[in-house]
Length: 169
Image (cartoon, rainbow, N blue to C red; front, side, top):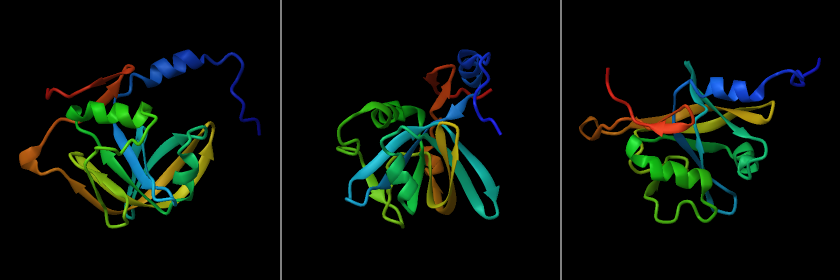
């Protein structure tokens, strides 16, 4: 079976079309065997199943963090609020210690839960699938939480190549 992209496929049009699908923004966090905290920004997050509770997200094979996420037993998916754009950018581009000065607490598995996240999902790294240029991670949710209703905020949204908040219709 041939898995190569057809030569006449328009990758730019594909990327542009995908950009029309609005997504939430997450920071996925874990801890390396050395004890170093690892976090990456991802918009490829989705629910899979309610019973058992499963979620998925994906990460490029070429990401420096892929080996750690691939081998770790646990991670946390932190759903960002619109007010956390700086946090989103820090975990997607910053080359230093991404956790320096960032408020967080250890979840039940010891993985970092970011303060101020709208919601978080503490996951057991149940399955990994190599597909195309990414690894798809399926996590079994062991614990989750949401920001207090009294502290509700709009989510950070990625659409059309840029970040946005939400305005109710």
